[in-house]
Image (tube, rainbow, N blue to C red):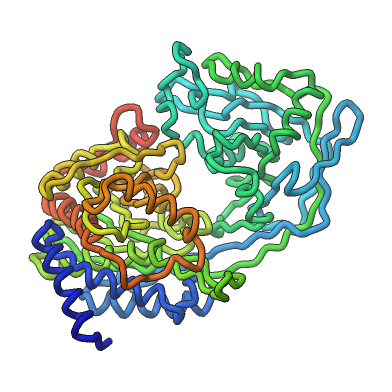
Amino acid sequence: MIRTSAAALALSLLASSALAQGAGPIDPARLSDITRTLASDAFEGRGPGTAGEDRTVEYLVREFKALGLEPAGDKGRFTQDVPLVRFQVKDGGSFSFDLKGQARPLERNRDIAPSTQRPVDRVKIDKAPLVFVGYGVTAPERGWDDFKGVDLKGKIAVFLINDPDFEAQAGEPVAGKFGGQAATYYARWTYKYEEAARRGALGALIVHEAPGAGYGWSTVVASNGEGFDIVRADPAKEKVLLQGWLSGEASRELFAAAGQDFEALKTAARRADFQPVALEGASFSASYGVEHARIVSRNVIGKITGAKRPAESVMFAAHWDAYGVGAPDAQGRTVRPGALDDAIGVAGTMEIARAFKAGPPPERTLVFAAWTAEERGLLGSEYYGVHPTTPLETMAANLTMDVLQPNGRAKDVVLIGAGQNALEDMLAKAAAAQGRTVTPDAHPERALFYRADHFSLARRGVPVLLLMGLGGGADLENGGREAGDKWVSDYTADCYHKTCDAWSADWDLTGAAEDVALFYEMGKDLANGRDWPNWKDGSEFRPLRDASAAWRR
């Protein structure tokens, strides 16, 4: 691509500034070029299973080869096939409570937001008993079990959203036990559905309350019954037949009809001695059709084999997918290009690979992954977690980039998920070398730590770290924290997952380059050392990592 001399000079100055300020070998001009390419209309918003995916994968494989990476996908390829299933609840179904003999119909998307992730043509549930299980948390490391051995087979488990100390008052024993306002994985709806399936429940319904969920009912119903999952060997074992949300109004009506005080039960659920409560005189019925179809998408994975300890690894990753083509916006644009979410993360991954290839071979293997279907539920990385091409037990760290800020240098780097593992100490050291500090995520209640691809590795014990610009505004050199917060607010409201998440010639990626350089420097230390970072005491992921300790002797 030929640039005008003025543009070339500007990009050269940006790169020189970044090198001088602490970005090392990470080039903001290259970050910009790669992002501009991936976010161009030719890639049609990079939707999985589309022509845009084919072009994206072809581009990434070509670039990985040009960087000198080795294939690390399936069967000697740069790609890993990711079989997915798309589910859609059909129109025309019926949902209802039976409340002491009286039918109470539930209107879809007003009272209930159902979905199904089993490949069945029809869901039919006839007067299944309902059991309130509080927050539905089993956390041995915190001395907590909401289930107390309750039998959920053939029943619908009813959950509160978030975790037991989200609304705790000062002085309550639970206060701080789950991080206070900072969400744990136990707070997430995905965990609650998984726990219901593990315990043999027929279905799982979560009571919607906006503060605990972090979003309103309109967000809950936005999918309109559409969902995706990886292809599973035994879906009936891993997924309940029906999962979904109940509106606050329908939930309170249910509890009242069963002779229960909803607010009193919420308070009781904040105690470790909480016992599940059968909602006597109430049952749930549903009958609806389900469309389901398979598609095969692809992760793109390359590596640099370690010169001394090739079985040990460090992974750098981002997701290549975005939201494809949608309805026209006010300007008639239909492509949702996902420039910052997450073409720039892919660019960062490629820049780190380029920097490593320019230096001596690392002692440990370096893995570079571009995941599919993050926007459909972290599915590309989840599939890798189930079918890794590099052993997870001897992976020292996963370092993930998802949305990097384009507003120039910052005095700090925002840490998502503070207090989780020892990688945070390495981040602080790398930031200090750049003359920067680390600022914890300003909104830990939004649970961003559990909403990006690194989580698929965390839940299998791999220590992870996420760079994401949405956890609160950075302290920008130009405008300070106020300008950083305004950018986050404006981007989230106006461009996130929309057509205007597009590449811009007005970006200043010197700050993004410094963020990427933090991971490069951490990666050098990890790749050429013998350290095995671990989760901190009290983390829900520490027991998972400790269980594989024998692999790392």
